[in-house]
Length: 459
Image (cartoon, rainbow, N blue to C red; front, side, top):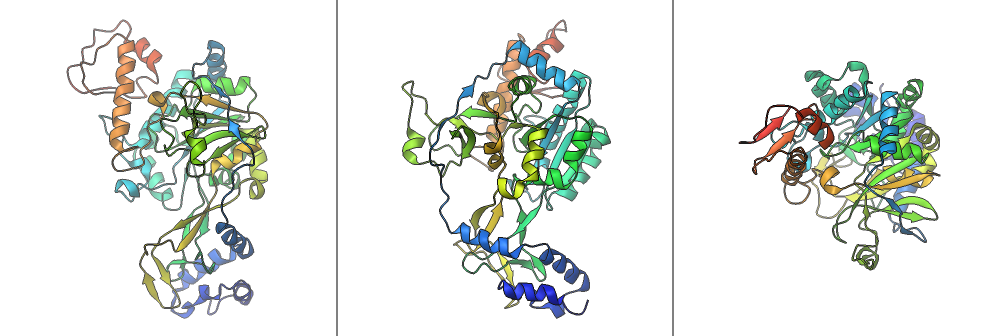
């Protein structure tokens, strides 16, 4: 290919993006081919519209109120319904793992980060073993769907292969990649480049999970396997109950299309989105958008009025996912984020260091933008101590240390309920030993007396 396709060059000129072909003659043939593929895949008119919207202030729903939250305790009937669905193979687990651990000081998939309180087991292992243990408990192997990004796909696949899928059968594990979106200059709308002949592309957000499910054929495969529900969770939370039978049972009993767990916010300024009801539909308002007076408003009991914090734990019906993904262009809008990034300038042939002020607009879809499209939905309380200890920051809140402390406290409580004193020592319960306090007590019942005299892993 000695020159770029004339039709593409004309389209780029029409949209003011002709700089994308600068330096063409100096590019290697394979770089040229990739660049042409990237450029031809772009909807430049849509990109221009998205950039214009990026300058507009994001609006709140005209009217909204706190959601009605169902309690954390599940009935025996709900537990039984969920267990039956698991025994019938009607539930799949969906792990969102497109992010890297850059904030944790590691340029590798976040799922490879050591998170086990004593064992140092990586997040991927913790989640995969919960899926494996659930399959063993209910007598039916559970499909594990893992959404990666271009940056994490190859190392994630290699990591699972190296560890023999952490005991899962190869046919249980499905990898699929989320899409990408180009970054543009906020002032001019011009495409940014990462390197000569290489667009600056970013993962299209956790909302891209749904479109990727459809585009990859994974959703069709679920239908073919008679899977009816998908348990969605993110890789950074080692406490998440990946396949909670009570939650599944309540979701099924209510014929819900989209059910979301919530944790009670600890403070008005806590950085979690808040579930609200807008015109009878479930929505999430990001923490920075909720007006301060509303964020601080309290009930007569002293609880925050808008307290339904989202830990990003959802349960979707497969039929709902099919409907949403068929109309994803309209139902899952792109949201813009301003970032400061280093990039390559094809006009000068130089790399531009990241400035102090934002110089790029990135576009993402968010999973919670699917929620308002559910005709039937639930907000279900879960206890923070039992299910929410994300690892997002290297130190401070939501860090490896806080997640470790939460895991030890939870597992110590399980042992206490089984009649065992940890004597203040750190403990960790492998999912392959027990998934909850009830199963742990059952495992230990009738065994030799257990005395904790040092940090202990039950596995």
